[in-house]
Image (cartoon, rainbow, N blue to C red):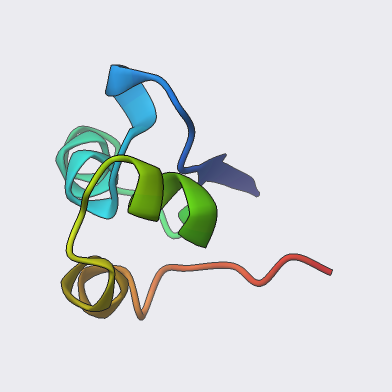
Amino acid sequence: MLSMEIMDTPLMSSITRYKALKADLPTPWFTVYPDLGNLTAWGSDVASELTLGARRSQPFI
């Protein structure tokens, strides 16, 4: 399994960007780890972003 963390780089700055990458890589093994701090730092609408990734996000344990 590969989980993309939302980071402080433009390539991986939002769940919206993850969804674009996911469209090119349609496998159930590619998921997203939504880092709330980085989503907030980018000025994203955090609630909307989390809704977009709700079915494909991985908790950090």
